[in-house]
Image 1 (tube, rainbow, N blue to C red):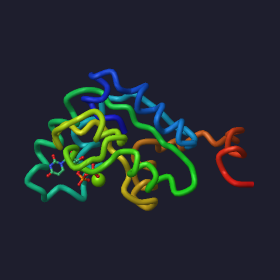
Image 2 (image 1 turned 180 degrees about the vertical axis):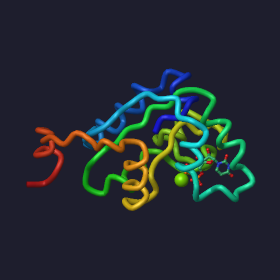
Image 3 (image 1 turned 135 degrees about the horizontal axis):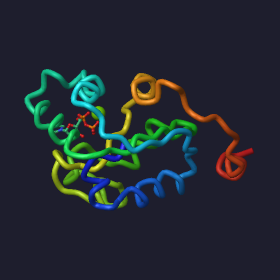
Image 4 (image 1 turned 120 degrees about the vertical axis):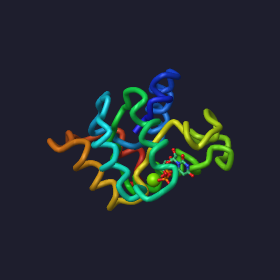
Length: 143
Ligand code: UDP
Ligand code: MG
């Protein structure tokens, strides 16, 4: 999910492009201004953290772009593309390492496992995703 700062800074295309170029398949996407309640559910595992109120304020500061990307090992690949939670610890070449500085405006969310991805897909896309054959897959994956 591209966070409000990513949308406002005009980085949506740049970020989508990185996932596409890696070979992942886009199966769902939407622009939305989610409610506080929705984001509290999304980040429910962090509810007891001291930064939780500021995180919710950040995430409700503007629209976000929610996406589902599929591919072999997609969750861990996605985390590699993101970089570290703290952008200053993120290597250049990663999204956070290339475009941001503060943890409280770190541009993008990525599911941290296949299990949490499934939970987040159910929350953000209750009507499911679009399944199709990506023709380039035969060039991305060894045959
Ligand atoms: N966050 C923060 N301060 C912290 C830790 C996290 O503001 O000390 C914010 C940051 O925007 C982060 C989000 O809370 O992306 C969710 O935290 P998590 O540990 O899940 O990091 P992520 O999975 O996004 O790398
Ligand atoms: Mg996380």
